[in-house]
Length: 211
Image 1 (cartoon, rainbow, N blue to C red):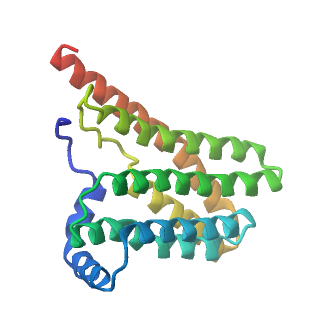
Image 2 (image 1 turned 135 degrees about the vertical axis):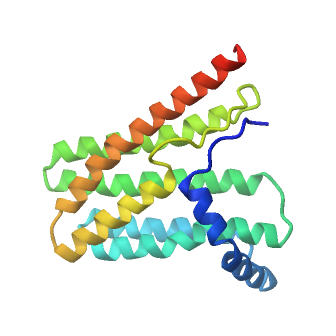
């Protein structure tokens, strides 16, 4: 088993939202809704949002991303409600989360490229790389051969999603891409710092164990 890590903001919010989430999950379970359907539905919403974002429709894209958030937590709650303890659901959820990240940053990259903002395109790609590395390091550290819990860092997934929502909706409301550009810069820096934080955490734990 991986060593314990400090609770992230995501973990704390999930605890706060657990009661209403479980009630909703129980209702969906009684209706026969499979948790994997919810996972896929969440990705489809993100894909639709990405299409709007790529064409500069930031308010519509941000609103769709906001609508997809409950589904990201609901699939696991429904799985627990129906007593499904298989590992495939976890793998599917993590895989589609990576697809969602890729779609969002691909949308930003397309928008910046279409507007000849190649400096911002590079930042969007850096943010994509950092987001993937944050998740990849955790996955590798959770491996039985490493067994180090790795949820540390400033920019876990919830913080990334929060920045994306603020920058897209703000750009839509203000009718300017400036919030999008600022948010992309924050994500490019924050995600890669978090990846390095997690790598340092794993190194320190393994060093303490003599590995």
